[in-house]
Amino acid sequence: MSMTDGPTPLETAAAEQAAEEREASAKAAGKSALRQREGRKTGYFSDRWNALSRQQQWAFLVIVVVLAYLLPLINPPIITTEPGNNFALACFDMARFALIAVGLNVVVGYAGLLDLGYVAFFAVGSYCAAMLTSPDSPFLHIPYLWTIPVAMAVTMFFGVVLGVPTLRLRGDYLAIVTLGFGEIVRILATIIPAMKGQVGFQNVGHPPGTEPNGAPIFSNSNGVPWYWLTLTIIIIITLLVGNLERSRVGRAWIAIREDEDAAEIMGVPTFKYKVWAFAIGAAIGGLSGALFAGQVGFVNNQKFDVTTSILFLAAVVLGGAGNKVGAILGGALVSYIPLRFTAIAEYKYLIFGIALVLIMIFRSQGLLPARQRLLAYGRTALNKVVSRDGMEAKDKDKPAAGSDAGAAAQRGAEA
Image 1: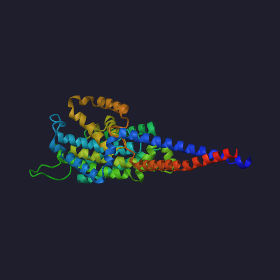
Image 2: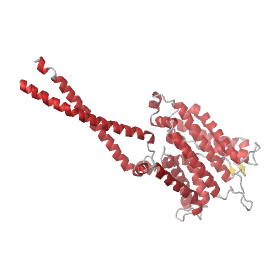
Image 3: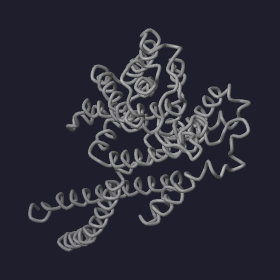
Image 4: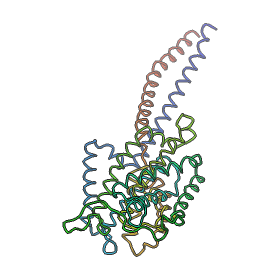
């Protein structure tokens, strides 16, 4: 009995284990197929874009960039903001908001840090340009173009100063602290005499260059050169941020955004990377503030309130947090809608509030949701491993089934 029945439990256990492996492989394959079907439903255009070759993608992007540069010259009749608002100046304002949204997207979209006081960095950049170029300022005067790197360096310093003591907080607590920082900057601009409060600084500097008639190229009323300058900066910043997103720093930000505790357990220095996110986002905010000060030519404390900061955040959420192209689109829309529909401009906060509620209901990740490109290769590898395991399980099942049948026949013959 021991000679014939002894191996039987082992064969049964092996068969049961093979069946469990087949069932697990089938479930994993089913989940993978379901995720792929859902991805095809929600990301049709993204899939089509990813299916193009690199050369085709760059050719399409070149066409889009050329059309973007020609936009204020074409002045399309359907989307123009005239006669209510000059379309070239409206294009600059859209580009300014888009640049701000790209900077805030680094903080909110990549690192997952809720910053309600981003307007503070925008204000610091504006005041740097004004206090270093305006004749109303008693400080050292330098050429306007030099104020751009100075504004970025100063705002980056303020980002680190704010981040070091506060980034150990999370969620609502961090949002409240950043909101308070934005108000502190505005109040300091009001009570410090050197910052001139509501009086402000007039005749802020601008880039060099004059037209044949002697008028400056970068005048306050000519929005085309300002738009081209800002658009060029957006392209450069977008390329840099895209490379940063695919680097080790970007992967750390994504890990922190998804689960900070898990990232820290896995060895990611979360505090360091959060400070980096604040510093880089602050530098881009200071850059946009310097451009704004140069174009407007006037800076005071009335342009940096909480509602402006909320508009910046709404631009990122509307376009899609974590997607740099979505942030550009959201920033452009937040600026464009009040300028295009001047009659309802005073209701812009109501309109954006309703739009955000609808987007949260029907498209919770924004107009252009963030695609997990950092995990795309990992997902492809996982699918390949699952399919390979399924094939190996099938190959193992064939001899296993045969051996089970042979053993059963042998036991029947012995019986």
